[in-house]
Amino acid sequence: MLKMSRRLFVPMGGAGLAAAYTALRARTPERLVSPPGTSVVAIAKVSGYRCDLVRPILDGVRACGLNVRGKNVLLKPNLVEFDASTTINTDPAVVAAAYAAFHQLGAATVLVGEGPGHRRDTYNLARQAGYYAVASNFEQVFTDLNRDDVTGVPGFLGSETLYLPDTALRADIIVSLAKMKTHHWAGVTLSMKNLFGIVPGAVYGWPKNRLHYAGITTSILELNRMVRNTFAIVDGVIGMEGNGPIQGRPKPCGVLVMGRDLRAVDATCCRVMGIEPLQVEYLRMAGALGQIEEGRIEQRGEPVAAVATGFDVIGRFSHLKKNAKNFKDRG
Amino acid sequence: MDLLADRLGFLRGTQNADGGWGYFPGKKSWVEPTVWAALALARDPHSPPELSRAWGLLRDCQNSDGGWPSAPGVEGSTWVTALVITLGDVLGKKSSQLARAANWLQGLTGAETSTLNRVLRAVKAPAVEREVKDPGWPWRPGDSAWVEPTCHALIALKKVFRRTRDGAVGHRIEAGERMLLATRCADGGWNYGSPQALGVSLPGYVETTALALMGLQGNAPQGAVRRARSLKEGLRSPLAGACLSIALALCGAGENGRALTRRSSPDILLCALEALDPGLLQPGVQLC
Image 1: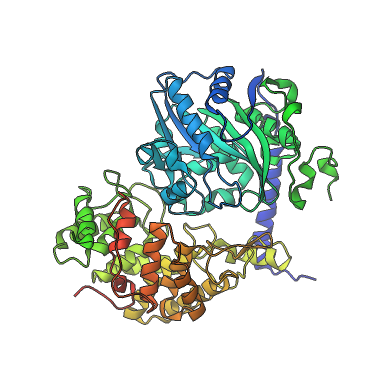
Image 2: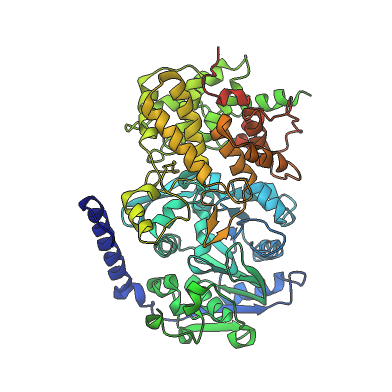
């Protein structure tokens, strides 16, 4: 039996109280109840990265009622790590198509920015991942968000100042160009978690450990609460299943999922992946941020049923799968 | 054209009016690129004015707790404190400022070695998949220890120990080295922190392997040095290449004269690391 001294008991008691408080907050009605109304989510079926991706993005952006004319747009892909044998990053073809589409839609500027979670040499990573093909002047339009100038934004976790890159803060619209992947800590990583990449490593380190200590779910919710001028395009042409977000397997799915309501987009992606969105903690707790119920999401383009496929998840997330036992029942 | 002179000229030409450097030309000053640019220029006999201005900026932005922020105006003391201690030692600064900084750094440990995390580990709920007996250094107070900040802390404290022979500093260095050796990956290199995640082995990366060797210096296992040398093959990242050259030189496995290529990047940190005299990171090495 574990003997516990007073010195050990005190911090454990504190941790218990903190956990109880977090659990209580998670059940606070305003965190669970969605706002009134509905949200539009567009699903485009595409056959691969070599087909025309600009047209489906143009159609999706228009279907979702996003007007970017005269606006400064920042494309924020998911650029994590390069491994030629799998599909970790938002594909450069999707980034290039979004870059062209937002220009065609009349954006004043279209920039690309990312702050990888643990790789320091962002430009080399972008080169390896094929991002230099996005634009002929890629180095002029790309910003390493890990090493950009920053400005403090108050209100993270209540009273904390969160430093964010000026390139992100100057943008009128941040497009979360996420990858459709499973995630070994969060269950899935889609457009909402993709905002981790705007948190600067030069302030928070590589990885951005502050976000992990605050809690992945809490940090996703806080970032999405603080950064509201967003639009999502999720690259599910070839996603990742299993032990994502880095060591998983490629999963062809053939979709782009788009929308202004990131919670609704992620919930729709989950349904496409064969995952029950209410079982994903951050989506369940993101009530105030958008819609999650199918009945409150206006589907445009392809219906979910036409593109749905089953993504494998690691054992600890087996309860996320549709038709899995109820969350409360899991051992 | 002399490629080293080109890099030093680039650094001299991109110093901000406040004496610091941004990560890229024209950007605000940050402590990390300021220290590395100053260290790179330290080999240049024409650079005393630049070094003096850089030190002036750093001197003025120390926090009251003894540590340094990531950048002037950014709250909180961070890992860059180690870099400033290293630069201060190289420049021969002997001030109470640096003594307070060394105290701050000495007291900084990764959260995974806290009492709570030791208990969680004892009851089989490990927050990190590595041995947590020996404390390393985090990026910021309250975070876990990682390879990179631990290596910079070791470089700095080894310089402090060389001057002070303070036993407490020596013990902390030994513990930090043990932490590094305990986080070595199965392939012989280092990842960013743990050697595995969810039971799956993680690969060593070039830059973190190089950083670990920079921190360990003479205490690096020969197998790790051999591993680092093998990583030069097919290396694509200029930043990793610069770190690897420094690391191998510090471990006595460098080649005579580094082969610099024509500078193609405006990245000030990269430029500074490529131009650095690795010997300046050794304990006891100061400018004359």
